[in-house]
Amino acid sequence: MEFQLTEEQLHWRAIARDFTEQVIKPDVLRRDRLPTAEERIPWDWIRAADALGLRTLGVSKEFGGVGVDIATMCIVGEELGVGDLGFAVIMDQCWKTAHLFADAMTPEQQQRFIPPFVADPEATTAIGITEEGVGSDHQGYYDSPDIELHMSAVRDGDDYVLNGTKRYISNGSMARLYFIIARIDKTKTLSEGGAVFVIPHDTPGFRAGFFHEKSSQRLATNGTFHLEDCRVPVTNLMIGEGMLGELRGKYLPGSKSEAAATVLGVGRAAYEYALDYAKQRVQGGKPIIEHQAVALMLGRMAMSLDAARLQIWKAAWLADRGHPDARVHGLLAKVNASEAAFETCRLAAEVLGGAGIMHEHPVEKYLRDAASFLHSDGTNQLCLLRAVRAISSQDGAELYGF
Image (cartoon, rainbow, N blue to C red):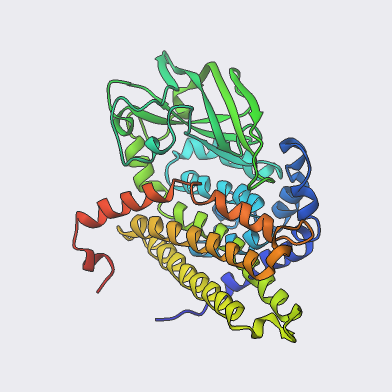
């Protein structure tokens, strides 16, 4: 068993770590406190990340991207998350859809959609699923015709006509390219009656709505957008009608581990800040790190973060090898990492005491950001239910290789 990172992984970790230290950290607290979502969008950071190859990290070299594996994206995602979770999420959305670029698109679709995305240094992608009546229901644990996903797609000659509204979408209303889920047949389950369409932002009938204001991931946007008689060519349909279940199950094996890595970075940032603070802050005649109450909190933080990282890396390793259990491990890694990060941020605030809620320290921001991932990318409760359902269908010992 080898835990040494490859030369390529070390290379990209160094680039991401330097980007975080030189670009993100010096200005992130000021940007986090800007009053509106639109002015917080870090377009200059996106362009700078593009120049380094971070935006197109998951795009294959054939189309001008970097083409790293899932494990490397997890390593980079953690480093960016140390700087700002919102920015890490912006990048991760691009990495997730890069898997769809590579594996789910036809050669014709690849030629139409990938080169413009790579060429535009401000281009991001978004996956449009969530609606007013469907949040956890679209995660696949419950799958029935009565699920309230109302975005419809009706075939009309060589086009589909789409109508409906999406909300809370990461990169929503700022992306250049959207992967939008709509229902072709509402009498069937979502998995069997749903489909995914690739839709550029300037398609007639696509109308950006507004950005939701929020307390977490403030540099990332969650947007609402509308499709009104939006005509989309049949050639923009991904892998076929009624294939939503297969597309989600087959073509996004590392999405949960990648997401988990970004919030792990927030926990690490909180731990590192609290550790440094505890070495400097003196009470009772000595640095507070020498008080057992504080030392025990720091030890628990270090333990939980390291365990979460190893679980993420294992899930990514399995995904890179096409292992059938990769998705289960990804679900578990996402839950563990988000809870470890949240608890670490809470303990960091405890270490700082009253200073933990003050704006001159970043810990209150870390805690706000970490809270979002208890529900982001699927609620933790639902992720665990999905994992247990999968585990119960096979030998649990076999799943873990015991």
